[in-house]
Amino acid sequence: MSVPNEDNMTSHSQLSSHFLGDLLDSIIVDVASECHRIARLGLDRNLEEEEEELRLSAQARVRVADPSNSGEANSKYVVDIFGQTHPPVANEIFECMNCGRSIMAGRFAPHLEKCMGKGRKARPKATRSSTAAQNRYSRGSPVSTYSAYSNSTSTNRLSNGTSGAAGEEYSNGTFPEP
Amino acid sequence: MRKSVNRPPTPDAGENQEKEPSVREIVNIKLIESGEKERLMELLRERLIECGWKDEMKALCRAFVKKKGRNNVTVDDLIHVITPKGRASIPDSIKAELLQRIRTFLVSAAL
Image (cartoon, rainbow over all chains, first blue to last red; front, side):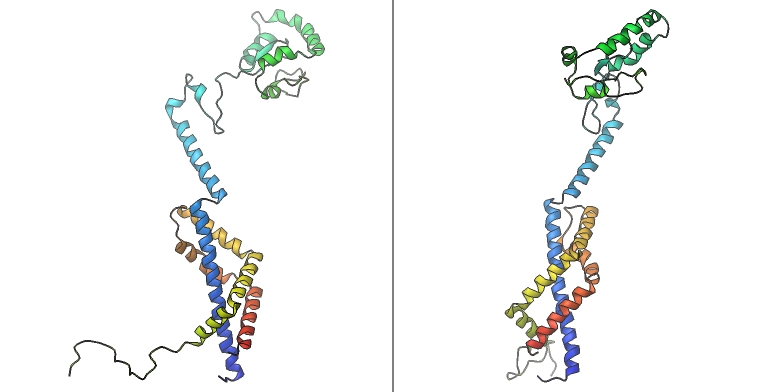
């Protein structure tokens, strides 16, 4: 068919656009199909993780709101958002920097009260503080004593350094690894 | 005489009963038979991946799936989600390249 050049141009342009649209539509269908497959098979990890997190946080909220969960008696079994349970009284053991005794973390504050002298039987201990200080510096590696108590690596976190501040400053002590 | 039934006029026996294939159909057949359509599709696919178009479309889909729930989504839904943005956001350079190739084909096929 002999058509003048200009007509050829426009009809060619039209045809080309038509076929480009055709190709594009096919590719769009392919992409949609692929995404549909990923969605239905749950292969999109991010989506899953978000759904998982939403579900877990909803669960956690329920547990927190649930009155039967709180209360001293049950507090052992409460699970936090990381899925860990904590005993009602912190049971990490470390050395009191004042008297050098091994103290349970949950009992540390009351111990310090007596140990550092608020009155009532506490004062007499003050004379021993120099001995306690000597003990502190000469303390070698009481590995045997501590390995019996420590049951997790987190003990190191709580082990107080040789600072004089009563438990306010924490620095990594010279305790050997259990 | 009244026609009892509405029916279109019967075509003459001599008339060509099949519609003549349109220019588009002819071109389509030629494209497919020569393998050019396949090549063009692969070229377009590659270009669209390179320029990030496919990733944009996938992101649109993911957002839609998150909203609607992954088990409530149909392919049709996703096609409708992608098509308007997809057709509009194809880069001009890619459009020009593909159009040029198609035109070349049309010329070479003497259409």
